[in-house]
Length: 459
Image (cartoon, rainbow, N blue to C red; front, side, top):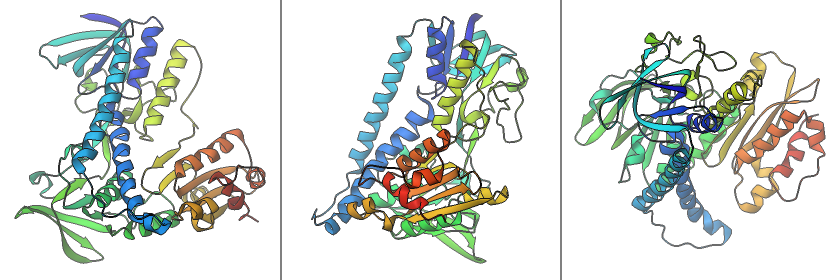
């Protein structure tokens, strides 16, 4: 049995930097990874999808260039070249991460599947054969999440795609059906529609983006439908079958039964934590009814010295949250600080085009909390920068506290929506009130400048 000061299970966006920093702090550290270094973000999530989104946006811009007085002629999408570019970027990021690990003294990278065989004991089924047993005082679980498969009759009998396997296609789908109208499904839907696929999105809720405010969801619905993307809501899926080289999805929508047919089916109806095979029953770590590892505000489980970081612990499933988990755990253990995850900001950005940048409370949440609030809404058609660049789709929206005049939250559905949202996030963190932003001097002409006009909407 090999003894280490620290063992990290999963080389994701929390696991890799944590392993390196612990080793640099003099801790003998082992990093266990069953697949690829970099986790979901580099291999199956942010990096590859945003690379492909950039290609899809180029198609859109080329098609709409005549409105700006630029004739582009026939537009050809080379799907194999798009995939190759994506793969090259992923391989570059992954190899860079692996090099950083290999150069770190005191850090051992082990490829294999980890399973607890005791409270502080882990047995690894090595990728190249054999097993290895490790023990440590500190153990960090960073195993992430995977696609959740809804209980749909016939689903297991068809060759469905997930957010991982769709990235492995070498040929563009002719007709793509997507189960799920949230962030993953919408990004892929718009992307493949722009590449040339006929896309139909099936959503069980009354609207896409069910957790967002209705005006935001309605605006994005209109944007996507204008690109000939089919969106069906309030959908119940009855059955999935494969028939004559087609996948047929039997649904009930608005009390009517119908069949949606396509060449490919993408399941994007949520994700579940990867805890089932960890052997947590052997170490006593508690999980909730969905399989997420339960942690306290310092990210420690009920077992002293065992921590969980990133998507596996539940809560906001974003790369930047996983990375922040690492910084909290590292600083608390090595620098003896007392940071906690409570009340930290949770910004996020969905990379449809236009982007949806979000921070803080939505109007829906402010209403549920019975806060004394007001909203400010500015359609992008009144934003000078949007008019000048030829993209007036979307809107800016902010929720403010009437009494303190502080910004409670914001949603920015706009070109560079994530960047505009980040300006408001900094204002929120700095306690800058909306009446100050109303008269703040921003550079002209920028998107951020229109925050003046946004807050002038409030009496």
